[in-house]
Length: 500
Image 1 (spheres, one colour):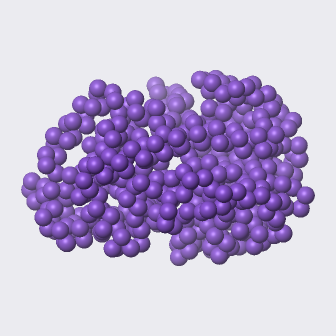
Image 2 (cartoon, rainbow, N blue to C red; image 1 turned 90 degrees about the horizontal axis):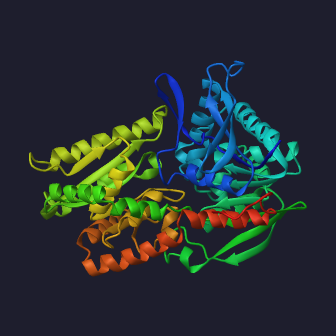
Image 3 (spheres, one colour; image 1 turned 120 degrees about the vertical axis):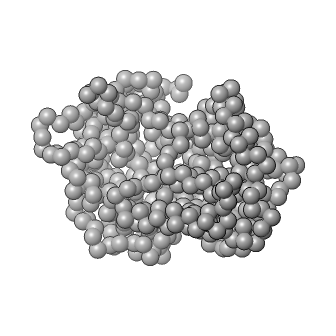
């Protein structure tokens, strides 16, 4: 027990690759992924630890390397890998987390699947995470737990180590009580989260929903509520809140409720956007487009992302405005979220068949309306597409935040381009200068994309200037600083040093 900060997250903080028959640990590829930001907190303590799971054919194998010691730019820390069997992973992650929790969190009640859930397995895996964190944490250490698949860890950890400060951050939406309470394990989950000292969310709506759920199930008192700042209010959008609870009490225990919108590494993205190689790539893309306008859509293959609905809107656009045939192209990037899930395979098939139908209806030898990309695009290449696009079309049906929208804005060092953004993305409460649309409304979607394509340059630049201001203000460092403030609510970090 030696770590002042223990981060508990289902993913390992690196990528494992094979080189010359040996396993090599590499830094995560995504510059804006949450993992590099979480690791940056290790620079504030003398000793840190990370708890994750690792697939093991035989979890009882004594040769399994459970602890790996890391020393990198973030400092010294250990990684405790919990060996989970393929069956455990399937039940814990693919079934319980993705078939039961994920649809409820995103308010897709019709996709909720309770029957196959192995709740004892979910409890067991969460108990293993809690045991590992308890074994690693120093006295009065801070344990920071992440996301819904580890909902039960705080409650177990509080029983194992009453001395610890416990924080939790949700990276997904948190639904209202009438949706969340569909889960038969709702009370057990909420009681576990109320064992925390700090519970964090991206935006005020999710924080307010959580408190409403807690009060619907238990005797929870709100002891502080504050006004939401202007930079987190987008007038008329679906997720805007005017006030947010910041402190609640359950029995004799006070819990801080924090709100911190995740951002992107604006400095890094801008450096890539301004690089000579990238500018040449962007110029080549524009030259290839000729006088065609480029609409860019980037997301995962997930029913929450609204890919099929977006393609249907593009088809209606070509039907209603035939003068755009041959004059606009949609680059639709939809990367498989999980190849082991039937629901996601169905979405991918629907996207492919819809795009094929549209290309068949409107395409010619010289022009195809849709370029469908089903692989991950290297980030440096993606920045060039962000810079070349006339419109970024980001219209999820539900999304905790959506960093793609922020990446697009950060890439637009030229001050041009239009962002069309769903009002059901968490980012919409910050990014009100985008063209905000309702992806459940055909009229709203069709009007938004038409408006974006026809927008005068002066208006494009005015909107983009404000978007760049807010994305620069709420960047990844802002998120980290806001999290540090919430840690202060729990007594701060033992052995803390000023951030570099």
